[in-house]
Length: 562
Image 1: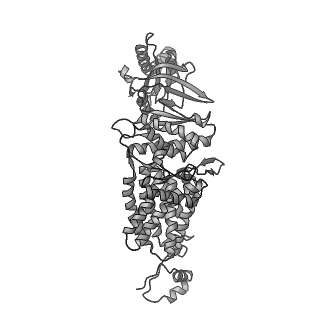
Image 2 (image 1 turned 30 degrees about the vertical axis):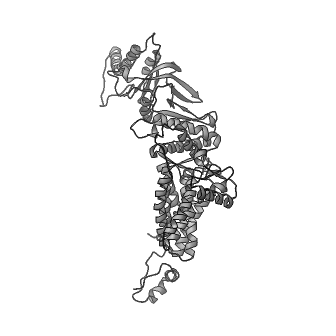
Image 3 (image 1 turned 180 degrees about the vertical axis):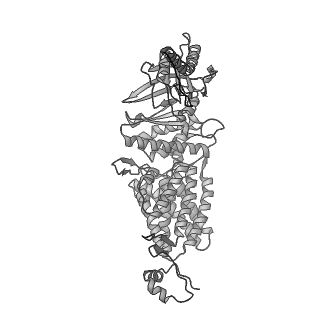
């Protein structure tokens, strides 16, 4: 039996182009590829060319965004909405990518961001560079399988090398300065340095605030709230909570100090009976009695809260009282609470009901029976701030908070959106450093060191897979190369200097984006996340291997009748 050779492609396409003649002329025993006549089929070299071009095209788009000197992209929606960003995850998520291979690379890179919160642009560029360098070897007739074997060997060696290259941090939460450096390195690639530096301190303090001993970090306990006023530089951390609504009664106080806070999930509004009941009365007195008995059920609950307030807030201790309820509070109940000088907020978010006891103390109660002083939290000040039609309630001055709020301020929607994305990535980078208990020297130091290491390692490899290892080592240099290129510096000259420095010193050597000269990132305070690098090494080479080993792309064609 002869099989249709994938490398030829010419005869096979000809037979498909003229099906009637092919049916008459096919010799017995020859296998015919039966594909829907409307399907697009790309064979061997064409399939490879399509995948290579997709990877290179996506790399070209993302290339200019890398690093603190990267440029911005402006995305315009169908209705004219504008988003200005250089965050790879946002770009790949918002761009409409038509090409199937390019969208596969984009999905893989965004998956990396979902897991580690960073490294999207680096992954896309590394995949693109691996494919670009493989193209020259494939053109010379080297089989893709041999390149893939070389990639495998290099990847395993790199994972081992990364473990030896990382810097262990014994107690990351205690080392605030190191965490600020990690956050700063991540944020500077997303927003301007003038904003990134203060924001780095905000995200580190937020993570240190919510970390509880012997429990995993839950970043949902950091509320990220935005107010459209002032400037982006006014964004700050509030060790307490900011709720995005205010009191619903005009007579309630706007500011209280030295407050007890009751967090509850109790319905304080009139409720109809669950069964369909009818009430009949013959006089106005009976009707009033009926209304009173219906209200009595709700009023009793409010009365118990008022009694607790009177018990714990006296003239001597000068305490005040705040009620924050997840369910509703109706106007008569609000009236009773306002009369006692209580601030009452209704319909708080469920997530805030988790955050509140962590921030102010006390417990969230589901019933007003047996209320006690231990159920109450405490805050130094609770006040309301109005912004046009919106009201915000600030709860500040809490002791030992395990939940906090990052209040983003900005004058425009796109600057607020950019800050939100950056804060999210900053929080994730600090979380990674805390969980990994290790960091990696940044500024391209790992990539340069890995390249030098692979140059040594390839000598121990025999046969053609050695070429795959060599390509892997060269592809790693795409990160330092692009950092130099985006800084407008001489790429070849500066890169050779940095590699030479690494070969002679054997210490981490990075690239200064200001001058392009070799620097020691450990002294400059440039640190990357260990998990981001590990994820990139696990993801990018595997995807590049799969794309190189594709020798046929079939795009299904369906007939118009069916």
